[in-house]
Length: 136
Image (cartoon, helix red, strand yellow):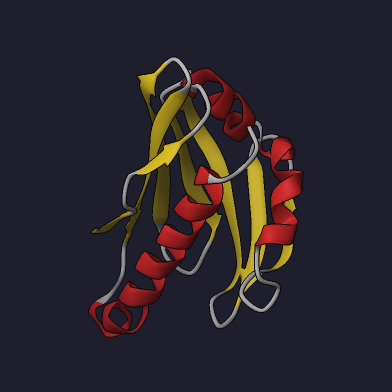
């Protein structure tokens, strides 16, 4: 299993507010306009699932499999060319700020690891950047 981690981002909102928004994926409707259409296509979501299409990978669906209130949201890939998981960790800094970090674990075979490793890390970092600037 390969592990990819974003840098830690500071979010200028309380931990509880950030968690409440991210724990229900319906709250991410406002994110659609921040995602480049050439990178992610056919983005849709409901309370527990997010589905998108990404070239050349194809369609991917992530499902929330665990919520630890105010601390962690864990996703698992339902429809993906590789088995993978995503964790969103939220840690308080003080009563008005928190930090977030994203982690992906993916089963990459040796042939595709070299081709996608950099893209996964770059994509994870972009997602963390977007989450850090959302209006919670």
